[in-house]
Amino acid sequence: MAVLELPTYESVISASERIKGYAHRTPLMRSHALDKALGAEVLFKCENLQRTGSFKFRGAFNALSNLDEQHRRAGVVTYSSGNHAQAIALSASLLKIPATIIMPHDAPASKVAATKNYGGNVVIYNRYKEDRELIARGLAEDHGLKLIPPYDNPEVIAGQGTAAKEFFEDADQIDYLFVSLGGGGLLAGSALSARALAPECKLYGVEPEAGNDGQRSFRSGAIVYIDTPRTIADGAQTQHLGEYTFPIIHSYVDDILTVKDEQLVDCMRLFASRMKLVVEPTGCLGLAASYDMRTLVQGKRIGVIISGGNIDLDRYGTLLVQGL
Ligand SMILES: *Cc1c(COP(=O)(O)O)cnc(C)c1O
Image (cartoon, rainbow, N blue to C red; front, side, top):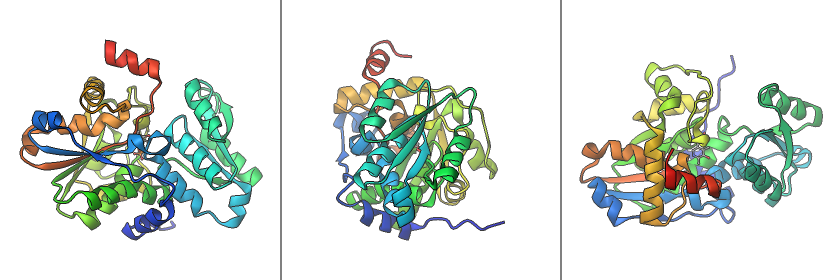
């Protein structure tokens, strides 16, 4: 069996050099109301204000800017209905690389439109009848394209790690960091940065309760596979951690926590009313978990990565006004 070459903090440093001038160094924000409610000092890393509206731009741009000449010419392919699609489409257009994005026939029209707008060549598939990974591999083989998966890739993980790298450079003495968890690209990358820059900081991944495969994998020591979970946190509707993300998470993360969808809606309201921030449900995982950990974080300095802010406006309005 081939031994996987896992990314390291050195890979995160290289990624941060490559994305410089392309990705935003997103701001840290605070809210006195939220500090008071939690009894802690809370610093938010605002990746909802990143290009394309989520941290995914970091990993996508890093992976694409590291392609060899042959793949730059032939192009890349990926599958995603969400933020990774937009991140690949914009990165590819900035780097003048052709990009094919495989999206399900029932993907929200706004996401398909955004991906096309960024210059992506969208291929629609039927999610009930076809296998997107097979389609992607077929296209990759037939046309010599490079497949860039949404999380299980060393360059993607290293790119995602730049958000926490910036966070720890801009904020010191952080006791706890809370990070949204889907397939684990963001959490694994954050772990590389946290262990290098803030070895004492406790690091928690947070996933929706309905999709607690990450927690079960972490606690059992082997990757657990589940059916697509039903949750409003669509960025975390993954079925399993990855071959690259799992070992990093298992070695460096302190625990994986879960929260309920209702808590995500409460946090969307808090972000809107207290901080004037539009945050998508998946972006609320970290804050929701830190509320659950209120007694533990009393008097501490904590960090929360707000992972993204992409949500259809009518859906956003409905969730804020009517709830689930
Ligand atoms: C993709 C995504 C996540 C999960 O990231 P992984 O790297 O798959 O763990 C969390 N939040 C948002 C907004 C996302 O787009």
